[in-house]
Image (cartoon, rainbow, N blue to C red; front, side, top):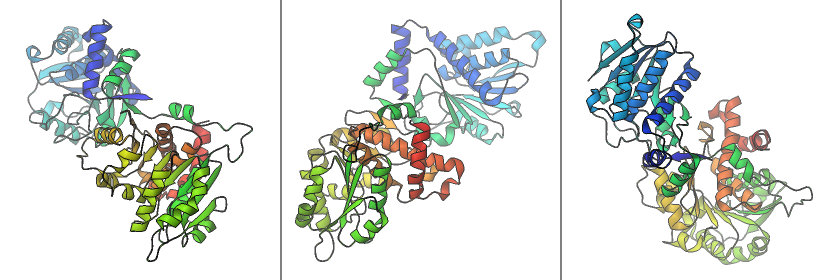
Length: 519
C-alpha cells in the first residue's frame, strides 16, 4: 500500500536520504521542482505563453516554488515570482534558487520573468492564468498571521486555478485541520510521499487532485521511517486483491467459510438482513442469522438463501441471556467467524446475552452497533477479551461513547485505541480508518458521499465477517471489507447520483466491483 507520512516522518526521510544515501538537499529540491512542473503541465497543459504567479515563502517550500518557476520559465511561461523574504533570510537552498532565477533572466525576454519582494497582496498579482502556492510547507502548527493570511485569502478569491506545493498553505500536514484559513487548490503536488493531512479532516476539501512526486528517497529509507514513526498507509486495489481468498475448484459451502450473524429485533430487522447478505456476497459459503423470536419470521422471509435461528426472549423484551446461549451454542461451535450487534437492541437482557456470548466464543469476531454499546458498559471489557481476535466497527459517535479522546487527530486516536484494546478498529467516517493492534493505520482510498445513508455500516460489518469466515486475519479482513464496500459505492456513484444510493444498492454493485477490479 502507498505510504502516508507525517511532517516529522517526511523530514526524517529527507534527512536520511541526505546523510545516509549521499543525495544533496539541493538535488532533492531540484527533483521535487521538476516533478511538480511536469505535474502542472499534465493537469493544465503546456506552460508556454501562460502567465503564472508564484507566491514563495522563505523556507524550502518556497525553494520548491522557485525551482518550478525557473523550469516553467524555461518552457516558455511568463513568470512572476513574489517572495516573502530577501535571499539573506531564506534557507540556503531557497536562496540559491533565487539567485539562479535572477541569472537566467535575459534582456530579450523582458516581461517574461519578474522577481519581486512582497509583504502583502499586490495588484500586479491579479489576472494570471495560474497561481502557485509555495508559501508554507509541512511545518505549520499555529494559525496563519499576516501577511500570509491575506495572501491565502487572495488566492482563494481568484477564479483561475491554484496549485499548492506539498501542502496547501494553512492546512495542518498531519491532521487536516485548517489553521485560520487555507488555500483551496485545484492541484496539490506533494513531495516524496502523501501527507496525512491531505487525506483526513478538511484536507480533501482543499487539495483538489493530488499527485505525489518521487524526489529520490530510496524505498528502504521510506520503509525504515515508516517503522520508526508508526506506519500509515493508503489502501489500494493491488494490496486488497492480493489478500482476497480464491475459492478452489473443489470447494463446498462449508469449506468456503461459515459465518454467524447475531442481530436484529422487532424494530430493526433490516440490519441483520443486510449484514448476512453482505457476508454471502463477499464469498462466505454458509451464513446463519440468529435473531430474536419475534423478528425471525420477518428476517427469514427476506433471506431465502440464509438459515435463520430464533433466540428466546425475556418478559418485557430483550434476549434471554441463558436460553439464548443454549440455542446458539451449536451454531457458534460450527462457525468460522461471528458478527454480533446489528439491530439487536439495548435492553438489559440483550446486553448480558452479548457479553456472555463474546466471553465464550473463541472464533474471530466482529462487534458492531449494539454490540459496541454492550461492551462499552463494562470498563476494561474490550482489552480483557479482544485478544487480537476482534474487529470493532464504530462510527464516530459510538467511538466517543467508548473512549474520551480529542478527535482532532483521528489517526492518532484510532492507533491508540487499537493498541490499548488489542483489537482491529474500523473507525468509520470520511475517510474510514483501519487501525491494527501493532500500531499500523490504513486510510481507506475508496468510498465517498454515496456512503452517507443508513445501513452501509451493517453491510460493512457483514463484509468483515464474511472475509473472516474465509480465513483472512482480522486486520486484513477489515482493510479488504472497507475497501471493497467503498469500491461498490464508487461504482454506483460513477453511473448515478451519489445521494440516490441506498445501502442495498451496495450489495448489487459489489459483485461487479469485485469482478472488474479485484480478479
